[in-house]
Image (cartoon, rainbow, N blue to C red; front, side, top):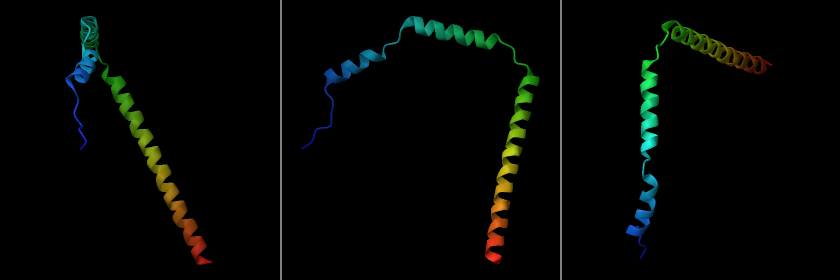
Length: 80
């Protein structure tokens, strides 16, 4: 018979690593409050979106051209 449980001694050893330092909490709180006070420029966000769309269009064009070239090459080989 195999016993797959853990003793309380093993559990207590593992839970000691889960303690949170109060200084970590205060530093995280300060970081969150400073991030909230920053303003966001909508033009920068729109530029990023436009760049991503251009990149997607370029990737799609490359993908379609590869598929078309494979079809043409396969057709040329099959016709001989």
